[in-house]
Image (cartoon, rainbow, N blue to C red; front, side, top):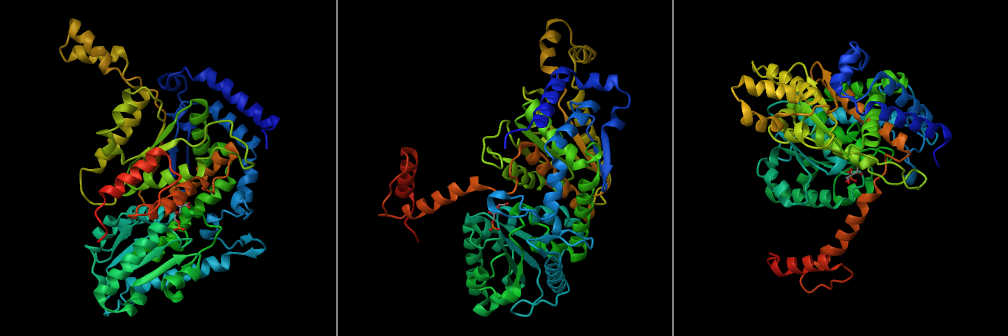
Length: 551
Ligand code: G6Q
């Protein structure tokens, strides 16, 4: 579908407005408007969002809201929540919101209310996680479970690993979680070296149960367990599966009693709210997992009902569009000043880039504007001693989200004030920078003068004017984490609606998988190799020559 007149005019108004304000420095914007902080900050579901250090005015927000209306964001939100097949290329709904629908409202997909099934799986998750936590679920030799090893990749790994790490403060020292995803056997081997077969529960997570990485790791884990415990029958006490395919789970040899289902309307990267969250429920307790769902549900309701200019996901998503399309910013940084969120940047990389790294619209026409920014990041405080230099003095515009907990989850004195001070100082430094006069005055005060001072000045100037958004919450409770992750899910959706793309498919990842299936047998001695470019053929030959013969 081509852009209608209303959409074109909303973009034109934004472009004209951008020309007016792009030359303004953030210092100037703050000087002009004493109410800027109050006007450009919002709070909902335990998250306070300050976007006043962004390159925008209140007028920008209104124009972005107009764009949201022009692309029918409200209609698309309703369609997603109502279970319409918004994932057009796969003919599926995208109903992660149903998984955390804590109200009593039915959600209907193809004429059927999915809520009874959702609640039934949650009840089974509660039974298993409580049995493991209470020591009622025994391993094959009669011992209680002490280690949970999740085997999955992509959406079946990043979500549960990130959430379990974020909520580690709610865990128990006698129950540890491990997340194995990489096909390189080092990942599994290192984990197996740390766990005891008698007290380990493997959770095999795969929506399709066809994924090469997961099945290879699962088979190796199974062989390891059977060899250590000396009996095939041990598998039933040490393996559970989470999948949409009962048939493949059975083929693999896991009892369906130990299988937890979910549905094709749950996308991999949106699946942590489903039984894919099982390791989290075991590690921190089902009550905490349900609190996570409740936090996400509160954000869903907020997203659905709040006007755009007070709506956290809408503002966050529209700001991404503003920076990507009007300022041409190619990347976006995510900088959590909460060590428990250290896996959030990797999680968001998948969420944002797999969802919105698209080049055609829902109708298959080329997009007319750049889509997802390259999302990257690391825990804020570590990043300061590494890549922040580029943010302060490099040549690129890099919008960033600062994610800040007011209270820590530990009791160590003297740390949290430092974390908070650094987070706030960085957003201030990125906003204001250091002018030439300021640099000169500081150097003079330090005793420099004349040519030495002149030569030093350019190296001490920081342009500032880097836009940041600060998300602040009291403490990383399960509710806050649920709200935060749902906030990001929805801001991703907002961008996809503005660009007219499908955020819920990922066809681009298929080609590499297909080619790997071709190349793997070609690596064997004597195999025919054909149809490759000179580089790939050369590398295949090199690997074959230098690979030690299979043991
Ligand atoms: C996520 C993607 C992808 C998927 C993995 C694992 O949205 O589809 O990351 O989660 O490829 O797939 P399985 O769960 O089917 O093993």
